[in-house]
Length: 302
Image (cartoon, rainbow, N blue to C red):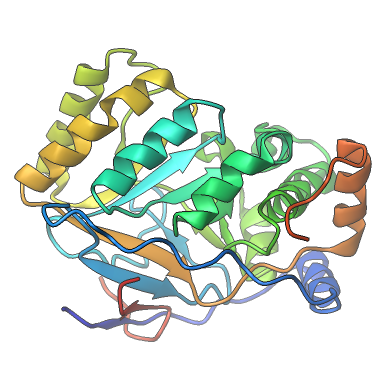
């Protein structure tokens, strides 16, 4: 198995608000243990995970060459599977079933409202050993917010809500809705030590409704780029339908799957935990050019 270390430049935390948020986060009470280890792979012909990469999110590094070019750690023919906007009742389960059949791992960027509304579904994502990040509280464009505090509220409510629903802190991985970032919000996330994910290959599954066409589009884009972070949505019925075919064709084409996970867990902020509790009205919570430093490293597969 290939083992390598990708290094990083130092990041400057230039936001007093971000620093304050980081200090608050350190004061949080201990969190419950995470879900049990996922079941072992029993399919001898499964695609499986080629390597697992652990990311040190200190300073808020960005990934995905569409927007962030500092950290290009994927080798040729390597892909990362990511899903936004879930969980959803039937579609997330279908995606999980397809991934489980191929013993594949993905990263899910969950919306806070969706997670606390369907906690049993996001817990199934965690139990299966996938990485869970966040995607704001209600999937609004943060860049369009005139009041910076409103944008921060969206980020932090999302973090608190998804962590509450899962029952344990999740990865400090964040994806902007519509990929619409801003310098100030990137500084804020850097102060919170949260990595930001863009993408390399957009499936356009939010526009293209034919499962076969989505698969074809993804494979064509990958052929041109040679590797990349694939952006999909587990709330889309046609995405759920096309997953077995997509995974089979990625395997047949010789692509290797990389699973990303975080070195540390995100710490929620007490005031946003309280706001989420108010929002959910007492619903029960679960279980109560390549740089060269150690921002990302290959670790043993699960």
